[in-house]
Amino acid sequence: MSDLLKKAVSLGWGLAVVSKEKIEAAVDELVQKGQIAPEQSKALVNQLVERGEEEQASFSASIQDMVKRKLQDFDVAASSDLIALKQRVMMLEQRVAALEGTGPEEPGEEDGQPNMETDGRAD
Image (tube, rainbow, N blue to C red):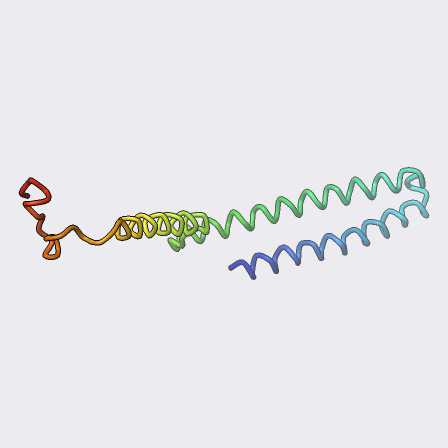
């Protein structure tokens, strides 16, 4: 899915570059026709390019939101969920290792039963 998202965003950036060139050409044409002053052309190009970038960012956010919703529909775990689970497993592995590494079993506990002589209690 991330490749598809990257391609969509790349397409959007490609369109933004082409759009800037087309905007500059269209504004230059307006200047040549005398419909806008040459001093205004740069500001107009910048304004239109900025608007295009805002639209592209909005498009990208919409695509990301759509992909996120679809992944939730398919019940795919988010990377943050996987990271949290990995951390939890690591913590549990450390706890198990610490419990197992506390030393050999007490004498008489080889069979899993407490040693009445050392424990002083029966379970």
